[in-house]
Length: 74
Ligand SMILES: [Zn+2]
Image (cartoon, protein in one colour):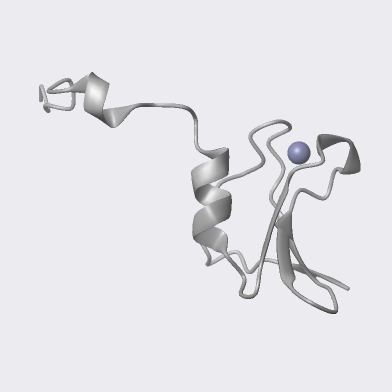
């Protein structure tokens, strides 16, 4: 059974196809997954683990190596 994630909840889109993930409840756990089967992009946990999904689907930026480039110039 899959559920749409409420629009008020902030989450990353699938890093492969850009679609908003859905939540699926299975007998033993919860999944956050891309509705596009060909992405095979999902995380599963005993809870709805949006943080894990977000970490996995963030654009790959290493903040430590960016150093001070986050200064505001305005
Ligand atoms: Zn996808």
